[in-house]
Image 1: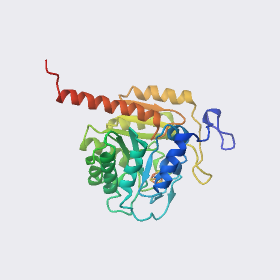
Image 2: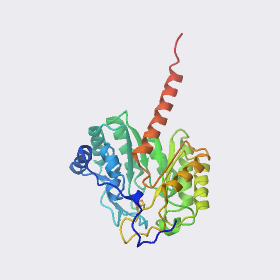
Image 3: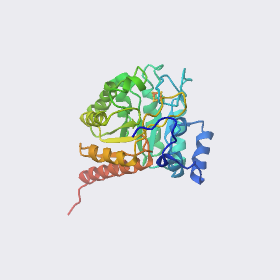
Image 4: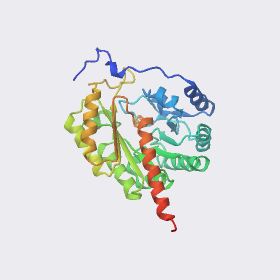
Length: 307
Ligand code: SF4
């Protein structure tokens, strides 16, 4: 179903404004510690639900990106200096919230030699010290496909690593920054598995940018071939009139049909829906359970019961 830009958003995309005690608490900690969240920068429609449930995705390395993807509301330009104390401040915030699952994302820092890999790794390590029970999912940039940079992040010990292909192959050059590419992103996901196959990998696709159904299915197939475990598929929403317009609002029924078809490809988990975003409370709950199950089975193997 194609809907012109002049038509209103469909009913299923109307959302409530964020509110509630937890929302206020998370907002206050974020502000007092001088941190950023992708939830706000990317104007995420789930902010009320996630923050209301005491969850937020922390965005590190500043709020200015060196790239300029045409769908993204994060400001582009020359980023500020890298704050060496940020990893500790993030860990402190997360300890305060006592979260069991956290997503740490970042802007792209092409101005840094390692793309910020070392800073991301330091943040993961600091969180692991302060919050040893917390499952950590860094949502990483492509690092230009630099294996050494990806290794730094992987060796810091996250349970899950995400990297988004964002869209189907044909639309990638039209909507992403020219320094990003569909193939490069697939390669990043492959490299993570080559480094450590036990790390769960996750990737996201936005729909509503003019992609065809067979292109979506091909993208899912490519992700599976790259060893990806978890896929999330959501609706693209135009952040401002300066960004790419929405070409199509996908119905909840169509999302469900994509989910069912893509699940058959063998992913551990597929989540699809109008409000699904790469970091989303509902998906994280499932991943958390997968990680716990794996941790329990490996600890029972190393500590077999004595009869
Ligand atoms: S790389 Fe693209 S999607 Fe990611 S923060 Fe920068 S502009 Fe946004």
